[in-house]
Image 1 (spheres, rainbow, N blue to C red):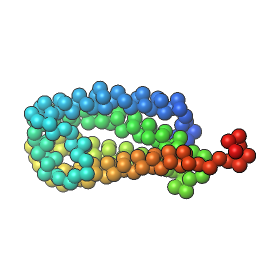
Image 2: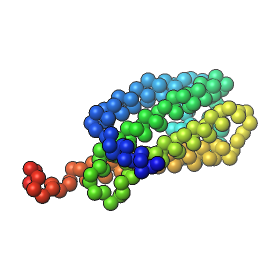
Image 3: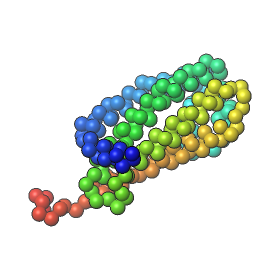
Image 4: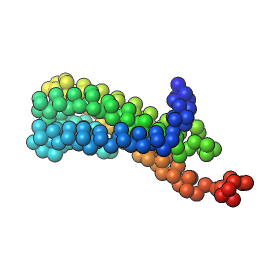
Length: 189
């Protein structure tokens, strides 16, 4: 299935697909997730933000404090946002990142393997698992679930690490593209 998905992205990747991915991506953080974060901060009475933006931290106790700080209305809004908005968002950014990597690595004889273009599926899977933990924590309040909070923290860190790896792959792809050698007998020769 992964190979088929990789082949699919290599097949559809084009500048039009890239522009479509960008057009689908940009409105989500600007018009949906940004306002959701502002709502959560308003309900909490401070700038605590959403759980899934805790970058490279491991603090299950802080996650449980955040869940409490959102209050009942904030937890309800966050649950709905996670189930709807933050389920659509990973689909869109995965499409965009797979398209970018497909454009950068197709027909380049890369040693990293033909599946490099679907590495963003790791970010996607980790994000959805993280979302499941967040919803569980929000809906189980006031019952503390330290194991779920710990798992959520691990998944959040793994998600961000995978996203960094995706960015590094894209950067490597750009460097390869810029410094590639012209093919013998081509017009560039």
